[in-house]
Length: 418
Ligand SMILES: *Cc1c(COP(=O)(O)O)cnc(C)c1O
Image 1: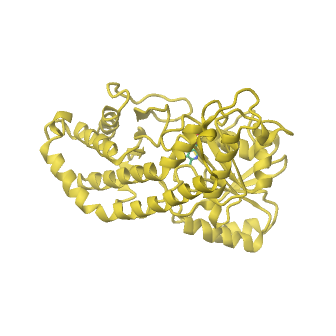
Image 2 (image 1 turned 60 degrees about the vertical axis):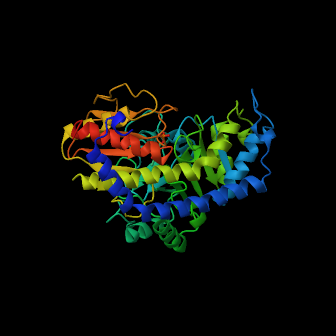
Image 3 (image 1 turned 180 degrees about the horizontal axis):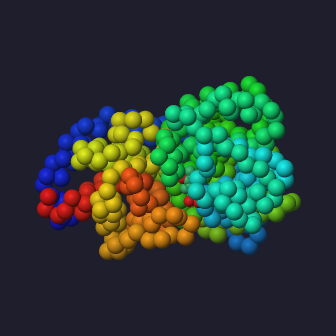
């Protein structure tokens, strides 16, 4: 069978060896997945999820009981006062935009304590000039770099004790940078330190790619509000779009009034048939995140054995679903990405090529053959074509499909019949 997909005996044997080596990592991932499944199941039971919650509303969307109950389920899982889980959010970037514009006012200052924020947020904030940015409304931005992949505690405490910062942003995942992602323990420690000197500053976590990777979420260790996309972890590969914001009730109200309008807030927003997919996606999410993590661990060990540099390594603790691979040369990187496309369920016969994407300085190659366009909980791999030639891979709805995709990518890279 492997042969029919073009996978050589040599690679198949290597794969079998690697699977033996990574067994213990899989066990840890499964334990976390069981714990998170328990959280989800309990929230479904406590909120009496039933068929009526799959119903839909149109128009203004008043009294959408499914939508309102989904928000209660999210609040319970995250241990927050309230949540906003909406298909009116176009993306994670949009939800982060709504949250920032909802909570910040002219002359306020926002402080990132994880260095440069995610690429798309740079335009939202106004680090990249834009006439509709936060900056254009007179909202200031400052950032403090990480040191040795951890928070620069002294600098942060010194800055926030002045009491003139309105909001702190923490990005849990590495995004498209080579820094490490941040563990819940590190986030917990820094929040404790901040609270010793400043009780009022709003602490917001960009939780994209981080949900269900650990047993706790940032909201359980002191974050006031957190934001994530449903075409990543929590949509479980089932949600067709949407995002969430979860946190303190007063802040969720501000976000809701920014998403819809002042005075209407959470009361409106038709679910347009999305409720069932949000619930089913959330139900599957612990297992889907586990599959993505297993695919990442497998990739890390396979690539290491083949002489490439994975980050994190297969046995390092993970705080997001992103796996980076350093190829060291453009040819292997491009062939690998093209192979990921060949190993996808959808559009497996397209061949991605590096291209000049708007907003990027280097050419970028993007491989994704997904059921939901742009979904990165499904197996996907992208890379800017620049030294040292690093690709960012994430996703895998099931470990089996993730593994097969990676095997095809490897075979495409090293050449057929090798
Ligand atoms: C994906 C991502 C975002 C933005 O989400 P989109 O849905 O792609 O707009 C923001 N922050 C981080 C860390 C992400 O990984």
